[in-house]
Image 1 (cartoon, helix red, strand yellow):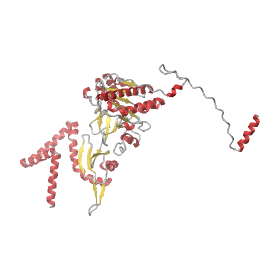
Image 2 (cartoon, helix red, strand yellow):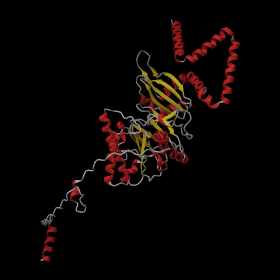
Image 3 (spheres, one colour):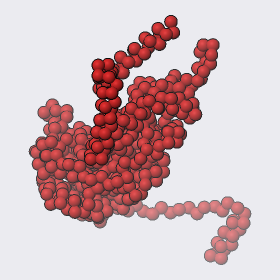
Image 4 (tube, helix red, strand yellow):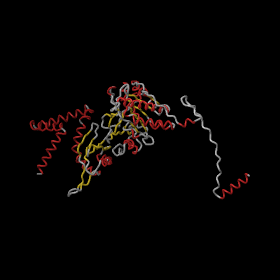
Length: 505
């Protein structure tokens, strides 16, 4: 009976393997058929030809070999060796549960369900979560898993109901500078996927600007400018065609964004009051667009030349309010609040860069659905930007090297998955070429509502009344009240007071 059960299980596993990997199964069946009808010598010759061919491929076309052959060979090797290796590692790092059911108590670990190897050499293990453990248990042991597998870093993400992906990164594929990605034509620009850089697995990093707001947090020199200029470069065909406008604010006096002045429909780098006026003008455009869409019965804005998508770029959000007057700060805060709460539905995206993501600096932080964590100062800031538990999931933004500007961690929208990316780097010549070949359309405008008059201003004698405002006479000053002298509280004070009164008399 045991032999029959073993045979049935073996046949079932072979059939499942053939269904999941038909190419490998077909190759194995062909080898068996060749051995059956042509003999062992023909099989040996075929194997020798394949080995020589792979060697020639590796020498002549190294990049193609690394992209197509090496991941498959490594995945085949990992599938054979890692199941036994995982059983020992799971017990050593504590990812096992004690099973008390039955007569024999035993330790149970999650089974290794699947193995994948990306073209960049990242090994992904799909592991079942046994009853008694959670995703957070695997996330907290990410560093221990990296040491156990002998890799540089291990990250844990959810793979579905009851399983997790454990990503093993042996080398840092983002240590070298990323060249700018190819640009699409203007009619092929997709606001939900703007080319910015590359993921750690070698795939392109597509940035979403449709129906969202973006917060980029990073310390000085982290490479926030790489993300901004890569986004502007990816949008440049649409800016030329006129169905995307960029309104930019550079509180640092234009040091970062002024070289690309031709890309912006509105640009301010002077006084905080002028930057506040830009935001309030954008609020007026937003309100008029919302009324127009509501009158047409449209709930989703579709950009076109006469009604473009507007991207509001604020290079340093903290500096925008650090040196302004209190009244200007209140106006800026109100305008930003309105844009963040109502702008997404009408085709307005706010992109803000900041060094300190704390609540005292970024009061509207929770209204930015898309967040990018570049090099940060401490682990607490990582969870501030990417959400609670992001640091345990492998988003070690506080460990990013100062020698790799542009590297960041992003959260995959709608999931808890964390991806490590790097934005492409644009030189000063690249930015100059971009500004020379791109021309922005004139900015939209809308009448702003009149500013409410403070009632206290009516009684200010130094302010002259406006033509439409009646003059209000200043109130006459009230007569000064005679204060009754206080009685001394102590005997010594009373004696001193009496002596003073006698001297005065």
